[in-house]
Length: 102
Image 1 (cartoon, rainbow, N blue to C red):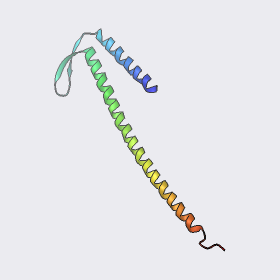
Image 2: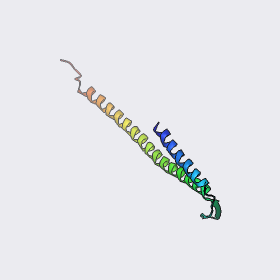
Image 3: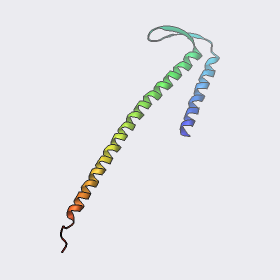
Image 4: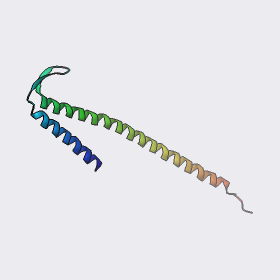
């Protein structure tokens, strides 16, 4: 539910930016890394917003993936250590019982 609300807010911002930009038909020259182009402000605003949004999600996704992998590794190590402790306890209790009863 939380993610749906976030998505709706971002979608509303995108729609508002396109709507506001659509009333401005001014053409601007945009110099990017390899070339230069002339775009309407509305198109430039919408495309740069979309690129920034996707880039932000990609970066956050990579950090999230890194944390999930670290969590999985930690859980695997924890299970291994718990298994070793269980084996040590079982061996310790077996050696404490007397072999001959009086």
